[in-house]
Image 1 (spheres, rainbow, N blue to C red):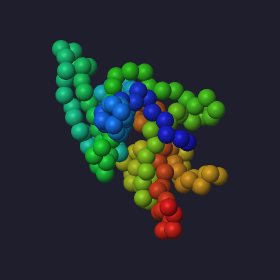
Image 2 (cartoon, rainbow, N blue to C red; image 1 turned 90 degrees about the horizontal axis):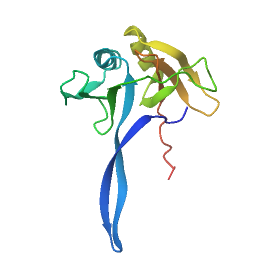
Image 3 (cartoon, helix red, strand yellow; image 1 turned 30 degrees about the vertical axis):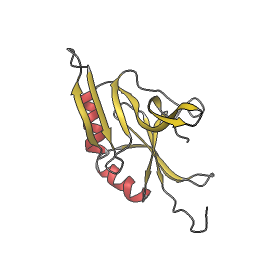
Length: 160
């Protein structure tokens, strides 16, 4: 599973160069995750995954006019913008699996999987060692969308 996202929102950084000005992408700030119910999604991401609400504010007269972002507790630079819309479906090549909306990293996949199961999170794929060398699992969110979780490998000391 590679990094997949829906509706990337990018922050641009303008860096002056000797020959003029060039626009560069500095970082990815958040990605949109389409959900069927904002409050249900907020509860799932905060109560099941342990994410924190970064911002939850209205921007119009309709209750659905809402800017709702959540972040993993260890990542202050990247978040998910929860938006009303049509969630993604099934994978084309593997129709028995949900489409992955984002990939995440953990230090200990078995420990994380046990904690998520204790919170009632559904697994589409149990922790598995893949042929390409990744130890990963897939969970599904409140709308049935896939979230990949991989165990981070330590970087080799002699690697440059």
